[in-house]
Image 1 (cartoon, rainbow, N blue to C red):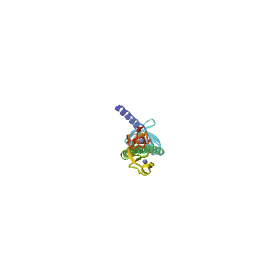
Image 2 (tube, rainbow, N blue to C red; image 1 turned 135 degrees about the horizontal axis):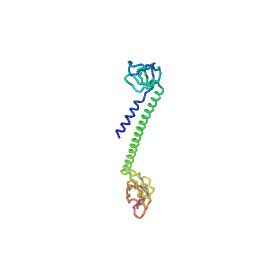
Image 3 (cartoon, rainbow, N blue to C red; image 1 turned 90 degrees about the horizontal axis):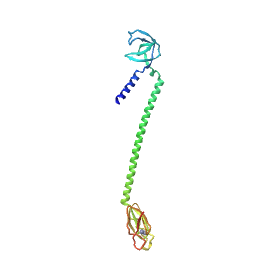
Image 4 (cartoon, helix red, strand yellow; image 1 turned 60 degrees about the horizontal axis):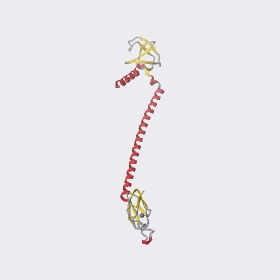
Length: 219
Ligand SMILES: [Zn+2]
Ligand SMILES: [Zn+2]
């Protein structure tokens, strides 16, 4: 398989190499029968003539002249590609466009990768934020329940005592820490208060019924 590819490449290179290259004469040039001034002169090619050079021998280019092989000095030849400036300009412009495209594509790829990486690190940050807030909630946020009224309050610490509507025992709430705040819903079937906690809340503190115990139901 490798040998086959190599063979194809060699054939292509040979084809390129053997491909006759167009040149333009820079003055009237003598055509000789061989690659040297000592060879017989076959004739002259006029200045500015485009000729196909099929081979180069030192400073001599092989050309077809009047149906036979002839040689002209390469010092009087100019690459036609150089002569045709607009075509060259066009091809170098194409080259620049290709290079720019490659550069832009590379840059876009780079930016995209950076953004994706940034996005990933950002979402990682978000996750860690969420984790830390859950951690905080678990560690320091609790449900407090007043055992005189049906008030419940989620708080980091014991809430303000003022404002209990159950005035028989004074204007202050009697707060009891009944649960750690969390994702699970519990409701007391007696007083109706509803809280979200990590586990079954404390039973103490219900304002209803014959005993002061909440009757929690998970839902
Ligand atoms: Zn109260
Ligand atoms: Zn209750």
